[in-house]
Length: 311
Image (cartoon, rainbow, N blue to C red; front, side, top):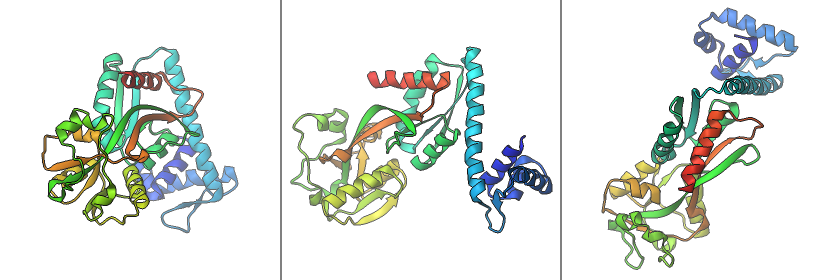
């Protein structure tokens, strides 16, 4: 390993002892290797007075440069492999829990039929962590439904979700048009002239919402703000499927995508209501870093997703 790799491991682990354990070397040997790099740089990389370790200003610049170098090295190796016309290799796909459960099985199946020798790994995490991994080169592409920084990433929308208000029948609002699960499956909520409901009529219903940092949280809180409603939130949750099961158990109303409603097991305990708002149309997209070169495996997956979108 190089001195830069030693430094980066210490940065990742935030500790010399943890980094030494990960690298299977002694802490004094690792400390000496890092000090050698700092000596060549002429400035300390780590502020050792803090625990966990912190980067100095020079250290921050060094780490940013190291990440760019690692990405260049990775691209070079992939370029060489592509020149050899290798169809083998690996692809790391990142996605949120909902996206990986609802879309990745079909996308991977379609891709594997065309490129059976490419090994695929899947990482499930929050949108923020996924895009950080994409930027650092730990993830090759991300499939998400939130916001995408188009200055840093190229994106391709391949599916559009419709977000519905799911309400236990015990809280039913009679004056509003409710859709059943079977009607959602049949697409009746998407037909022109479908009756939309008013969020104000559900102001007294307890809600089950996804927590901060989730794209659905941002959307739903904006809906409440515009409707001038302060929701009674019974529970904050992390996953849409958990929210679905909690709502089906009668604990409160929640917001679900029509994709999840279609895929869920048959259940007649919920009514679904159509609300009209631009935020309730949610695009599912694939994102890759903006770069002058993308390995063949990434290009092939992008093209496969484009085919999926065209169906």
